[in-house]
Amino acid sequence: MLTCIIRYQIDPTKKAQFNTYAQNWGRAIPRCGADLIGYFAPYEGSSTLAYGIYDVPSLAEYEAYRARLSADPLGKENYAFAQKERFILREDRTWLTCASAPHGDPS
Image (cartoon, rainbow, N blue to C red; front, side, top):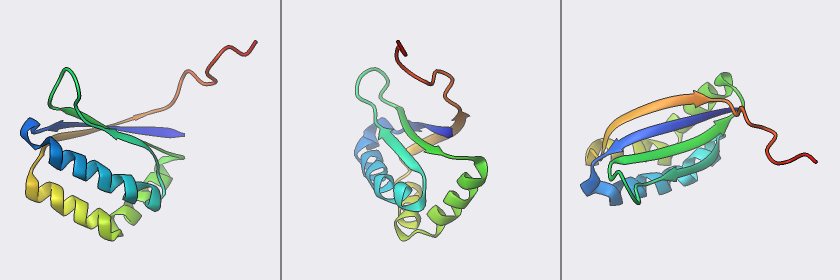
């Protein structure tokens, strides 16, 4: 399993727009085939950092998921919303694998 962590730098005066964007992805991403862990908006500390986190089985599955997301009506609408409202100032993706599994004390 691969985990994609999207790090957003957002306009702190447009947090409500980011929240709408995140809620839209909360419906579209699972429908298109990724396992959404969640979108996270600033709460304490930095007012400009936000994250989106989801799992996919492989990079090949990611490519298929992205194609479905690009064709999804809510996906298209959400991309357009972000471009129109300009609340995302920067977006970076990092791919990770879980190195600590299994978790917990096995005894």
